Image 1 (cartoon, rainbow, N blue to C red):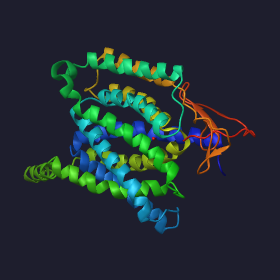
Image 2: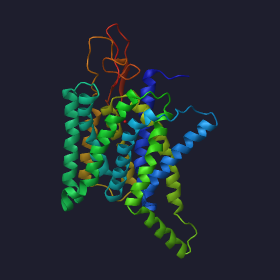
Image 3: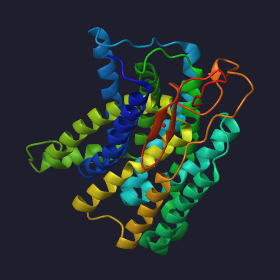
Image 4: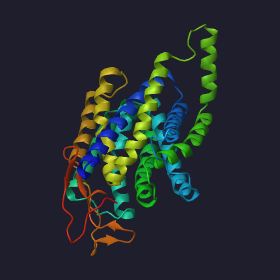
Length: 357
């Protein structure tokens, strides 16, 4: 039974939020046992490809074929995706989870500009600019309380800063792809991004000396007569990461198709709240109380953000069949208060609204 338009948006946001928040924590724990970030991500990409191929082989799902004219736009996205994943993993391995989340919280500021300049949306309202400013204030407050910033200055934020710019481009360009590339299934975007994404990750592994570290670690465990070549808990976390990583592939593209690029980016920020809470309970490399309060301020700003509508036109549809105002692809206006404020409105003779991860 097909879900209603409203239910589809809610389902996409909930699924993406769960997978995104979980994957940060799972990968952080996994890197504690298997400190090979690019290799870990590569295995997760392979797991998603295996899932797609098995599903297609047993006729359990439809999959878009590989078409060369679709490869070019996805290749550029994949470069940004791979670089973003690498920057994220490097940030997680060199700093705490909160640092990554705060820099991710700044991304909606940039993506909102991309939305207005390149993706046909109105500029954010005063309410939304205020909400985004609160996010920026929280991030600045966090930086002032972070010991790494105080001791190392901007050097401590090289990878998180690079991650911010890369993921902002990735979010905006990903929305442009899903709006402009005619994929018939959600397996298509997952197939293209993962298939094109694993070779760069293996290259990053070589650049980071991960193969040599892996070889040395295995040799040491063999010499010490240990029963397992790899820590069992690390393997378990890797398997969990493969499952969640496959889930975020599907839920991410599904959610991206339902909301604007800025809203998609902001959803990824807000759902990290759960990650912070769990991190505080199980990990000892977390921020101070003042840092957590600063992070909470970022999340409060996200709560009050309101998605900008599509720029108004004088007719029902613009060129290419894109509806003219500010709802989701199924006619839903999505707000962010408290996390989701969606409503279905009737299509009128004046036109319909449409959203232009």
